[in-house]
Amino acid sequence: RTGSGEIRIGGARVRSLSASTGSGDVTAAETDAEAVEVRTGSGDVDIAAVGGRLTKLSARTGSGDVALRLPKEASFELRADQGSGDLTSRFSDAQPIARGRHVVGYRRGTATTQLAVGTGSGDVTVSPGG
Image (tube, rainbow, N blue to C red):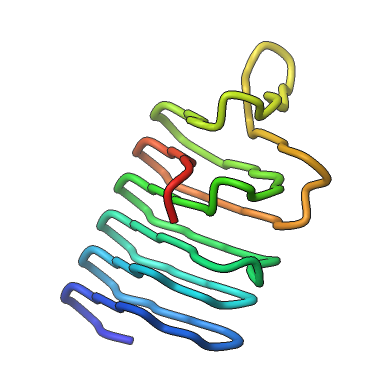
């Protein structure tokens, strides 16, 4: 946890990972965890999950992009709460979840992993390549 500054985590193998900063980017590379929670008031979030243990991920930023990289065989449901910005899945077989005419998430497979993402202003991308 930091009031202001960047947080970088690499190669963590833990049950639960939590990171929070008032202002700054949060990067978690090669993360093998069951649960991940990341918050930043202003900054980008970049999480690369490896292994098959991840079941719950929450990422929130007031202003910034969120990039999630998951194992290529990942089964997930992504729900995004965005003020503005694009929502993109680079998993070609992920099905969009729509509310009215707006895509608010993506579902792939049996949705073993629950992904909740919020950004006031910023893009959200989920892609293979944890």
